[in-house]
Amino acid sequence: MANKKKYIVLSVAGVLILSSIIAFYNRQLIMAWYDNAKNNPFKTGDKVYAFRYFVLNNNKNRKLLLFRIGKSTSSSDMLPVATTAVMSDSLIKYKSSYIGTYIKVKYVPGVVNGKKVIVPFHSVKLNKWVMNKNSVKSDTLPKGYTYIDSDLYVVLPLIEKKEQNTY
Image (cartoon, rainbow, N blue to C red; front, side, top):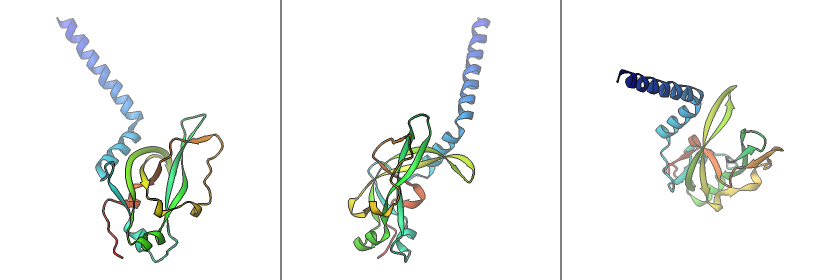
């Protein structure tokens, strides 16, 4: 019987060590997932509004950039590419900062201030009346990249769950 307990303890220890190694190598993804779970107020189908500073700024040509995610065909690299924008003058015209409906989150590796990080990008089904494709100069992916889907993505600090603007 002692032999059986020894193998059980060794098996449990092996699983814990293996889990620790996997967690250590994926700590950035785990931290990004935890931070998103803690700070993301959105669920699929929620209305999405532009951040209040974006609309209240006096500059009517201010843009809220939306991205599409490109993936390398030869490696696992991913790249956000600005493809369209929401213009503040459209929101002012319709007297609402409502820009669309929340879909999902996608974690994209990147570099911020020289550090490797994983950034959560949030997919939004955009209302057609707020989109301006001509406002972004570059809509092309670098050679060797393809889009992973047709969704448009934005970062969380630029959107809100409730209308915060007054017109």
